[in-house]
Length: 334
Image 1 (cartoon, rainbow, N blue to C red):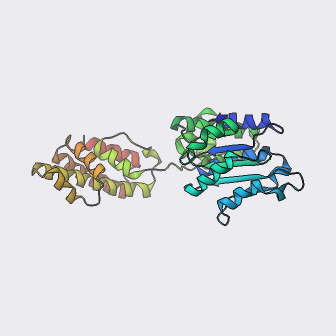
Image 2 (cartoon, rainbow, N blue to C red; image 1 turned 180 degrees about the horizontal axis):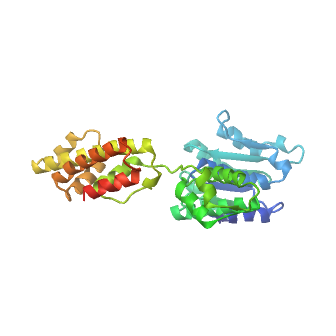
Image 3 (tube, one colour; image 1 turned 90 degrees about the horizontal axis):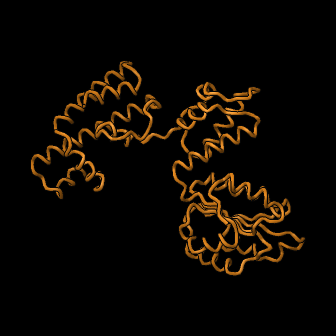
């Protein structure tokens, strides 16, 4: 049995409690926090006497020693089933795969085993077996829009559980501001619930009042986008002063690279020699820039350097917010 939706997975656990819970679970989630949440949900629905004897793989315990706990008769002196959680937060070693395979070939069905991993890699050979014999919760192939929907629904569920609602425009603003990870959404929901106090609805005004942006800017990609006229990878309205100065520096580097590429091309420099002028640039990245440069003239890059100098002066003299200055650069280099 496999689930790719957290709500459906939790519903399964609730319906299976207490007598129909599986002896074998596999949780696949690239994010460590999300994986721990899913594993915690399984443990939550186990009878207290089983959860009380949980054994976990940690830095001071070997994989084989923890796995052996499932086959240790001393654990059952009081009639309690053992629970072992093996969470592979790092790469799974070959010997660990072999030991796991040996156990799954003859599992102890009166024990429970929860396996966590960031991906199917090295566990693919067991996937169909676990799906048939146990339960899989799999986020390893989740698409971007699916994750955003899951996080949105999870946040709304958390708000409902607290007896409140969140306005549609407030939710949209959160999605715009936040990195798309569970830990960030959980922390932000807790803040908003406390801030709302006795009010039943969380509004956009609440989000604007206390929710800082955790949007991770890839400034290098933004610099590429402004210089080479590509689609922006982030929202420039969320840039602060420290972001802007770094972005200007990266844009200058892109403009200088473009200008140098055009000069080399005009001199007839062969492709294999051009790379020697850019020792710090990966070959694939350089090839991409070389192809882009074919659509521009050397004067475009000179004009861009002048325009960048002008908007940097404006920024230092309080000439306006970042989006306006960057739009001005874009207009000056069209």
